[in-house]
Amino acid sequence: VTNAGEPSTKASLIVVSNRLPFVLIRNAKTQELERRASAGGLVTAVCPVVIKGSGLWVGWSGIHLEDPNEAIPESNPNDQTPTAGLKSDQVVSVNINAKIFDSYYNGCCNKIFWPLFHSMPGRANFGGEHWHDYVTVNKHFAVRTIEALEKCLAKNEGSDKSPPIVWIHDYHLMLAANWVREHAEEKNLPCRLAFFLHIPFPPWDIFRLLPWSDEILQGMLGCDLVGFHIQDYCLNFVDCCQRNLGCRVDRNNLLVEHGGRTVRIRPLPIGIPYERFVNLATTAPKVLKTSKMQIILGVDRLDYTKGLVHRLMAFEALLLKYPQHKEKVSLLQISVPSRTDVKEYRELKEEVDQLVGRINGRFTTANWAPIRYIYDYVSQDELAALYRDAAVCLVTPLRDGMNLVAKEFVACQINEVPGVLVISPFAGAGEMMHEALLCNPYEVNEAAEVIHRALTMPEDERVLRMARLRRREAECDVSHWMRCFLKAVGALEMDDVGTTIM
Ligand code: G6P
Image (cartoon, rainbow, N blue to C red; front, side, top):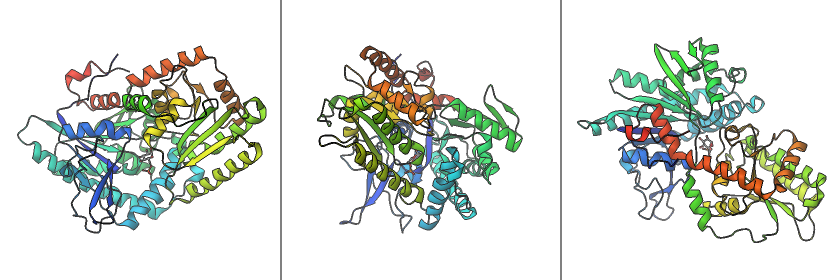
């Protein structure tokens, strides 16, 4: 089955997310603001729909502006990315006092919601003042969203467009929907409201540890549609609505009754811009010069949910149990700096640095080092070349909403003899990528066995597994996700419906 082109809808799409699809940088010479585009898959799929439907994007620009009315620049004329066509009048930037923003983003989102939603309550640092700032920021986003909605409706007046869809994203903005609904109802502004969570939704027994669990559920239930990556997260959410709020729920049809309305809950597993990665892998020059060395690749934001320490220990266990891999296999770990304002992330960096040093000190010979460790951003070109030429890719998070690295690796496997994907069952992606080798990152010795199996897997088995993995990712790419979302929210053009596949 081939995918249809870009999904289309008669409704304008108003996207609301913590970050805009680009960041603003102040040019040191001219003092002018400039856009730096983001290359993420979400932006690739969502931006064209916003642009085509004359929609808007509400979010933070990555810079705290002294003058909140300072104009957003148009994109650079050489910009080839999907955000290039997003005009400045389609952007509503949210400006928040730097101190409050830090408390909302780092204090609440990164130090409370992130660990808790990843089922790591021991790392969560509850603080009432941060919750207070989270509420303030969500209210502010709601106000800016209503402004965006008014602007959109004014522009669409007299056209045959259906009511705009307001699509709120992720754990940063779990309260905003309810206020958007209230204001929209007061002001008689027609719209459909949807939410998508990009991280896991935890089971009730974890979720209820949050002192503000009821408020969060009520905030999300302000929507008509709430989407998660996989069925398990949907069921967890439905369960929490029933047990915390006493809502009437239908677990089979994933419906929750709240405030006299029925809210639809849907699994909407995100994909990647598959073709873009195939093209990158086809054109990217070789990065790995030593073709005889088998490369085990790891690519992650440096985050404690990604299981880096466990992965390094599993690799050490592999070298101990199977010394035949010495001087023949190297682990290339790319750790992308992330959230460096948060203590846990800085501590993790120390821990990983030390562990890499210890393992390398233990095994390195005159001609070989077992681990090559990069702590930096890597270009998409370079990444595609590494994905393409790696023998094994380790995607072994302790918990992960979906994990797109697994999908990007698969898309880049264009060599005749493909590599092997090793995936943790605790990543959303592990639910569907059945042909990968499953690996429980907590079982370090067992994980070493799985890596050994991947390194020694016969060619025909690699080919068979990878072909199936690739077919699924090609079909269920990020445009497919976008179409599924529009269908779920009831806004897909009829022409597109028939092409939707699962
Ligand atoms: C996760 C979240 C995103 C977030 C990203 C990077 O994937 O779901 O919403 O943007 O991490 O984290 P950051 O804190 O840098 O935005």
